[in-house]
Amino acid sequence: MTQVTGVATVWLPVTDMQRAVGFYADTLGLSVTQQEDEWAELKADGLTIGLNARDEESPAGDGGAVVAFKPSDELEQAVEALGAKGVQFNDGISDHPWGRIANFRDPDGNALQLYTPPT
Image 1 (cartoon, helix red, strand yellow):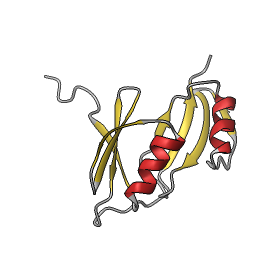
Image 2: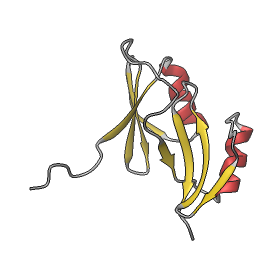
Image 3: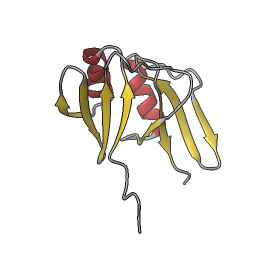
């Protein structure tokens, strides 16, 4: 018997809901589907990203899960466009046998990346 059927939500702790929603919606271009005082949900190509601003939750910014987004254009173009919006890619684009990535963080320090598979 299958115990799980997929991923329901990937949620990230945030300290400032308005700032976080602004980053994910305005900077990254995700669609907000729900927003309350302590919780917001955004859609990322069928995956729900949850933002949790409860006091007992706090971002660590030093490990844990990484959300990897598919760029809508070529990786270089996406890095350039997000860089123009203030996103910092400290390590640039790195090439690996399993694909190419560009690491960045949200305003709370949660680890994010742009990812393209190998061609």
